[in-house]
Image (cartoon, rainbow, N blue to C red; front, top):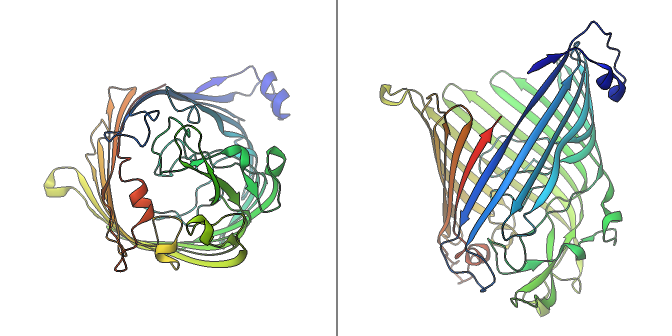
Length: 433
């Protein structure tokens, strides 16, 4: 961080009451990353690639007033992908003005907000849209335009959100992109419950509230959201992609009301975690003429959905006096729709091991697996990272669908089957400055 005295530019941008004798904190940092991806299995179509190379970068500029009350933070992100044109994109992760005065804090602009405590599935996390083309794990998020205000007291912290603009979920390039789940989604046909399509439909009136407090060993969050669902319902269109013949689906975003609870208890080496949501939205029913998939021709029904995920994490500190730590994670994921869920977390168990070397290179390895209790389908993943010198970091990720199972009635796990040949290995080398 550098301290500068010429304050006219900053004062002009924010109108801050800074006198010439005061110093301004300016923080500049970022990273540039080379990424290589490989899909070992042959693709569904000859135009789909097996190897991808891309370049990405993220830059952050922070301007902070001497009093600490005012801040302007800008963080753009960009990626260029060799083959996947949808993955070549630019996003403003953050672009916000923040004001802090005692127990009160307000933010206006583009920001990222994370809710939740569990590892495998973040049920209550709903503010930001998933950056679906960045990673299949759903951890990367798009910046969300918002107005946020919070007040902290001994009774907890209450935060309100106004979200005036919606970000749609991107999907991989329909011709070259991978992983490809056996269908394509055309962003230009995106439909909202209001009946609108296109850019004007993204101007929305979404709102959220969140209350947080700690009670001894327990950290508790209560949340409420009323607005546009971040996860689209994919509708059959009866059309096929002209290049590869894969079915074309249409993304439909319903109006959603969701209440959520997240709790984490810290008991020595134990972390106990729970997330619960109840949501209501209008969903299209399965269409017999579309292979049992929903379509615009089928009826709509207001649906109340109860979901939960929870488990524990136990850490073995200084394992065998080696100075390293080993964490064991086990969580259960439940959706009352079970095998009819439009996602892979209807009745599943996740198990993971996290090893941390606690060395100067910040070496860490995470191995995880998911098992569907209805079909016995399973998948495994590996993530490893290590700093190289003072400015570089190497990250290796591998994801495999290990087994595609079926229920007692013979119904296969649709998502596991769709991704059975979409295993991937991803290597990233990042330079930080």
